[in-house]
Length: 239
Image (cartoon, rainbow, N blue to C red; front, side, top):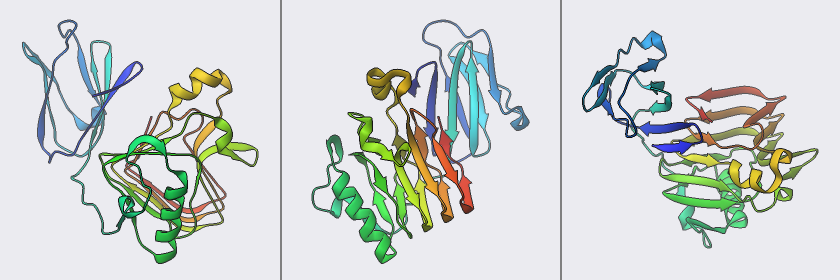
């Protein structure tokens, strides 16, 4: 479980159906609920915790007493063929070294050759990135694309601030099971309510696919797509 202020997030790729057992560390379980109720999941309270069964892939909100858990149940990951970001010289997967130049070069190179850029296990710290036509980025489940929150001025885009952007592009894909982290708390600790960095702005783009990825902790709007056509958003986790 990952704590996000007043709720938790859990992600699993177990094959359905599977059983879930949750224990409450601070007190006994008095009440419990699993939604959406259309799934007809009826949790039962036992001495060792809360028991229920997940029969379908999807998103669930589990409430145990006053604790809320967002449970994402996805099918198993199958990484597509592509070019691993780690094959590009200068890549840092520790999340400690800003690597915008390398990441942008990798995006441009794979887009121009019609290949998929794979972000494999690790953390990749970047400033503003631009997605040209034919960008196809796949973020694996143990990978994170992390915004450099040291200065919001890195993210100026016209009259906006944004981490990722694309304009007048065709065939742009962001997919996978990994995380794009907007580092909300880091920005707020420095700028407070004046933090205005959006996660993504796409303008006048066609054939856009956003699939599976976690868009986490954005300090402004998460996804801003305008004047775009043929946009598909599938199984996104936006929180």
